[in-house]
Image (cartoon, rainbow, N blue to C red; front, side):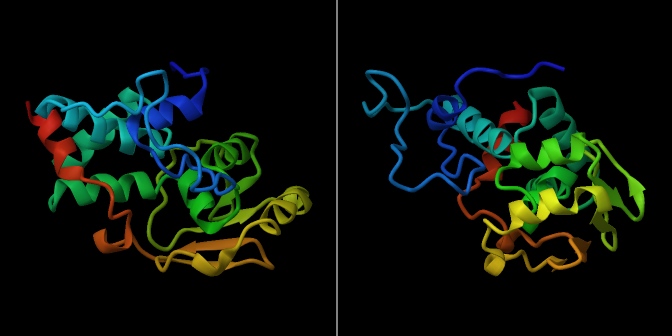
Length: 200
């Protein structure tokens, strides 16, 4: 699978990803596009607006073009609001669940934790970051990995833990209670533009 290895901060700035999936970065970081003319205001075409929104959401969750297209196809196939279903699918990725629960400082670190086999889902080891967690699933950390994960959690404030999961910080256990509602997700996402992008 293709993997981008260039300067991520510049890439994210170009597409308007504000949090960069990183709790360490402050809001003082420049949010304009990178480069000499990055701050110049440009009137974007309709297609550019659709593309920008698709890239912003895709890069926020750190998925490839091919993966994102598959998530969209799956969301379009299911009954319900396609845009909301798309965001729910992305939110239920195992690496994102760990990030939301505070078991990783960044989504990249959460993905690495999964890749290295530190995580159990319902008692079985899962080392696939794109694994989709279902309502009622219980995510725990392997006993050999407890010290490492606890050192990560100590640097993260869990006061803003998501309402759709129950987090036991002492036992390092996450219970994925339900899928999040649209109003609980990022209000800056304009998923309707993504639907229009793929509808062309």
